[in-house]
Length: 279
Image 1 (cartoon, one colour):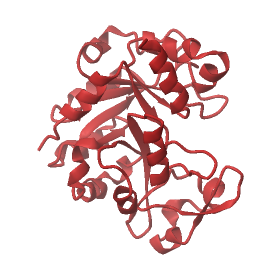
Image 2 (tube, helix red, strand yellow):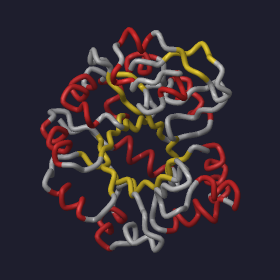
Image 3 (cartoon, helix red, strand yellow):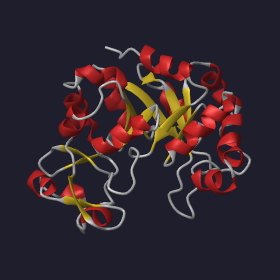
């Protein structure tokens, strides 16, 4: 069964471009990858919330980006090395490194505490798709709002392609050859592409090979988050540049390439920019 993409396309048609927020809107005592962050995202007029999936040694799924354990939990071990009991005993630390009364949320807890009409970009679940996809099937009230992503590796695509429920999906594209791999799996429910643009001349996004997606009802997503001083997710056009030099210098240039969705750590600022462009 292919999940109907009409609600997703409707959301795209409602706006000049979509705003996605990285790990939910978080700062201060609002912790990333929590239902609180999802709620604040809606306050900030976000169109889609990103979450990350990790799995305990018992096989339970949690909303957490592995690698952030020491910063967020004061834990040196990777979360995937922890049991469900150990994970549930951990308290978060906020942006001031103060412990707060908030714990890592299981997928089920997160689901029970968010608005079920929130589009959720499910990241970093691909290593678990053999078990995660059947697990996801039970949350039928949000099937039209779940959007999976992954690198377009054949081993991931085969699992996704063979699963009886065809979830909305967009691959992370770093080169044009990956589009040929996607073509090997015609049953995928592709609703867009995340474009990782590493070239200064924007060779990837400007390629005529992408015209099929640019001219169709597809989301073309640029990631403007600033992970560190070296990584360029869209040719150096990032949040820092937008905030310090002006939105047109960064987000404006991104949108001129045909991109119609931006993932950011500053959704409220991006929302104000979108509103200013609609006047």
